[in-house]
Image (tube, rainbow, N blue to C red; front, top):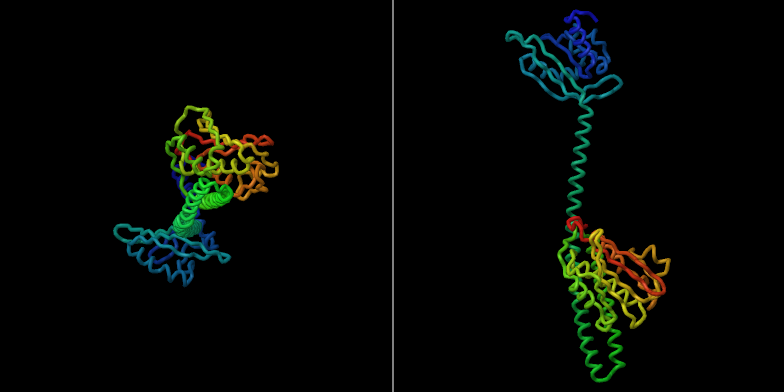
Length: 384
């Protein structure tokens, strides 16, 4: 290194043009090379010093020269040229390139043109990958739209099914209720008991239909639930009213909180509470009480709903699958709240999950079982 700034500039200029990966060259109006950087060695396998004084036809070969010649002629006519070309190299390598011919005009005369050729293979691969990804995204969105349409159609069919099947069963239940009243008034206890059992069967069938339809809707639910300020006493009343008439008197309500309303989806919470009460009534000893306790807590703010039976408790083998779909036991009367499970407690767990809360087993044993619903009240907009 010397103090000659001009020499330094020449040195750094040559260093710069030889280190860049793009091909840089100058071809005069006779298409003879006057300058070429070291990139020509990597691209074409030729010593750039030996290119000086040679024709561009000799470098490119007849086929590539013929394709590029129209751009050269336009550059020599003073028009800047930019185009893409696949450039073959040593060992059969193919480089997707972006070429630029820049006319060298002096005093209105074009003496030659500058060449810059850049390898854009990676860019092209990235663009192709993005295009494939975009096509895949479009396909996925179209598929999702088809699935959404199918889900909407299925929901509509389920609604029709619910109406077509449940309405006749409700009518039959009402007719049996009326017949049972008449039979009891006439003193025919034997027949009225049979009618009562038939009504119980209808109630079980309606409950199974409701649970099956509820699972189909819950599993397909794409959006968060809408929580409203619901009167707790109304929730309790409608859930108890869903129980068979002769069983409602067994449910004892205990209020341990002055709170009157809570944020929830009324229809879903009714479904969850109805399943807890139904299980507690069904799997407790006949005539035994079922306790429904309403409480609350502050950290985090939540409504607590406890349902306690006086059954034999849940067998340890059922505890791991208590809230799973299809978990079941012997179903023997009085064998505990956890037995006879199908969809009921699975629906309870799903409803609470959608509320951002939990369904919990507080205790179980020979003295009975208590299940708790924790309906969180903080940040209702985050419910899923």
